[in-house]
Image 1 (tube, rainbow, N blue to C red):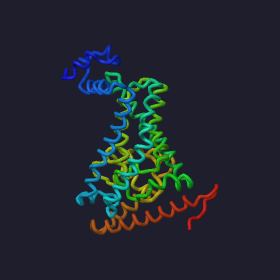
Image 2 (tube, one colour):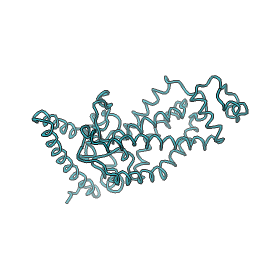
Image 3 (cartoon, one colour):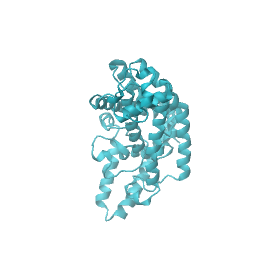
Image 4 (tube, helix red, strand yellow):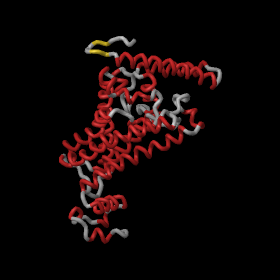
Length: 331
């Protein structure tokens, strides 16, 4: 045992029947946190929000550094569009506003609700990886399907104009922009992240919040990376073919259309909402084959991207022009 052992000997009633000698280091620190705070609800809420902030901004920092280094431009999907420090700061302010006004209450009230359905929080030891892995996989699939339909709904005229348009401010997204959105959108799409665990809790009652933290960490990594704007040879979509990644989602921001899912490509493929994307990739491949050198290909690709973005601007204007059950033509 470490130096905190005496505290466990006179521990709160939470751990009165816990044998700390059988816990690993992380489980010991977990119990120490709850004992230090003294109130399980407060301890869970603080830890959950701190985890979200540390993981989100911690994952954004490497992309901020990469954006500042010209060496990485060869892997930038839209190399002529690098976010400025001012854009990043404006984005950060909006993200923080949403975090404290929307996500903090959602995070805080999720846990008492989930505990009502049987979720464990302060309890140790943690569940085995054999239980956690299928749970996290279920959350990924559920969230991806939920996001696909909710995201499509947000492209409907009135919802787009008044809510989702904020997230499309940047046709070339960057890491910090993953949660740059209207507070209503944060609540709508964030529901898909917590609804899966809540439903699982309701039916199975064997979920530990530590598994939830693993899920949230992976989900935040996925969201930030999908908005990074970079496609490296070692990016996950080159290892797992059905993984979406930045190359998939960057097209959605550039062209406004297609590719509504988050983690996987299945929903877009089954629904046929990736046809423009595949046409674009085929044109890029043809340009690369026809180009005499890298400089010529880069110039032709920029021209194609500008064309796709112009089509996206037109499609966006048509979405905003939607009125009362009829699709008006944009001016």
